Length: 199
Image (tube, rainbow, N blue to C red; front, top):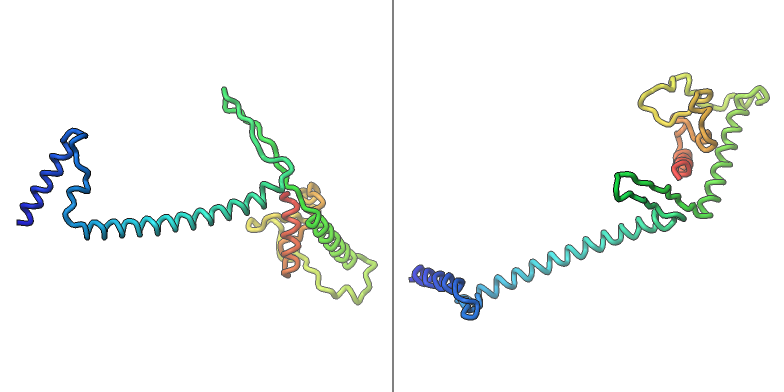
């Protein structure tokens, strides 16, 4: 009996779909189990609300990342990065955006450069003939005793006297050699010098 009712209901729905628009009944008029229909609607609404809340959370997280990126990279530029592209060809001309270094960072970098220069002068003094004999026993790393400088696994090594060292800028000459990065303070100083080179 239930199967016959189901067939009749399906037949009525199909006939209703083929009727003229003015004679068609809404789909809800053929509902016979309102309790189940309301349950399905409630579950659907619950799933939609959960999905909407998840999307809103993800959008808030993306917005936060976007704002941080803009604050860190876009706002400090005195000249924003842009590109002029030709309509008739693939030619394009880009400018070179430059990061504006805050005064606080400039002062900190100046102090670190002076510290590093004093450190290099001390090393040169310890190697020189005017160094007192009691200071000659201080440990100085001599990388040429255990490395050739041509190791493929080492990058950014400007050895004294090499062609790269002659072409190096002032900040590049201040960089520690790879085997000199033994303490946390030296690593932090190296990071600041590399950041200065990058900007």
